[in-house]
Amino acid sequence: MQQDKIEALKTNINRKFVGKEAVTEHLIVALLGGGHVLIEDVPGVGKTTLAKVMAKSVDGIFSRIQLTPDTLPTDIIGTSIYSAKEEAFKVVKGPVFSNILLADEINRTSPKTQSALLEAMEERQVTLDGTTYELPDPFLVLATQNPSEQVGTYPLPEAELDRFMMKLQIGYPIKEENLRLADRYLSGELDAETEPVISIQDVKVMKEEVKQVICKQEVVEYCLAIVEKTRDLKEVVYGLSPRAGLELIRATQAYAYIKGRDYVIPEDVIAMSKVCLPHRLILTTEAYISRYTGFQLISEILDKVKRPA
Image 1 (tube, helix red, strand yellow):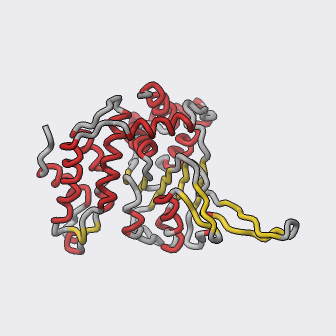
Image 2 (image 1 turned 135 degrees about the vertical axis):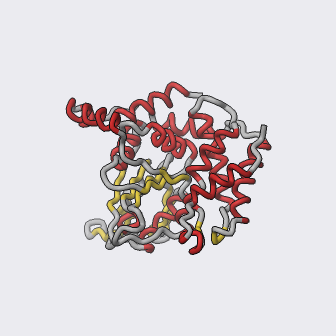
């Protein structure tokens, strides 16, 4: 366990990303759990700041893509360009070759371009002109999307939603957080360079340690029971996938790890279910009309499924 390094990482991020400690924790969970994060929120609440500070804090490579309706898949993964000097095609790698990739406003680009991220997110590799290239490790996609009711958005396909370990919302800061943010802005602290507090190698080591966190059989069965229960809901088109169950288990291990434990408890499962599962549920038209939400349905399931002692 490397609790001192985790605390240093949290503190370093929260110097710039003020007042949202829970969001910081969840992002670290995704990083150590090998998952990706989707953030749906209004502009200006710190999404880009969060991604940049995270990358700098772990001494990683950061890339940002501003996705628009005319963004092409090659703008993300790269392309081959003919070099007259070398008389051959040269591969120019895209911004996806990074440790932390911020895909800004992902639902403003076309489904064809959105799909360019699928192989990268799932396989940690991309294929250019028939050649497969491995992506750096760790690799985390932090995608942001505008609320779907805004003009010019394309809903993310179900297959892509299922590849995000968790969906987060940052929200507006409360009064005290706003005052702290303003103080740090006026003092110049927000403009100060972010220094690394851990290395990419530290992250790799912690990712392996997360996999060793003990998840007893009854806790595994509890995770899977929650997932299976969604398949019986009349409010959803279809229930959660096996991938959802596996990522929930890994998220609970990472969450227990950053809390300083080498074993998972039911409370970890409850906490992670609320951020790892709701966005994967595809609700029926009747459920939308009745104003059901994925979060509400998961909360109801958590109340019904018996938790282990």
